[in-house]
Length: 128
Image (cartoon, rainbow, N blue to C red):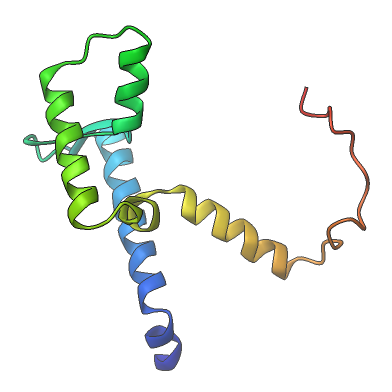
């Protein structure tokens, strides 16, 4: 077990961080915790640190929205962190989609599902 923990220490650390972040967002919305206020597009951490998604802000700007000063400061903080730590930090450590996609890949390996191309053929228009 110790060897497993050592081998997967970064994956386990990422999962703990992702679960803590999701718990803080859920707790803020469900129980009124003041750790984080907002969502992944724009949030205020500990009542003082604004963080805003640069792409969502750019999209809002081109859609005609007036961008507030605190959102611009949040974009600046995020861009600074991307420059200092690296752009993939959010995707690997904070984004909850990682848990979903890696869990789906794990389930695909564990369940006796047919190999790709050997299962039933679905119409390409099924999404409509």
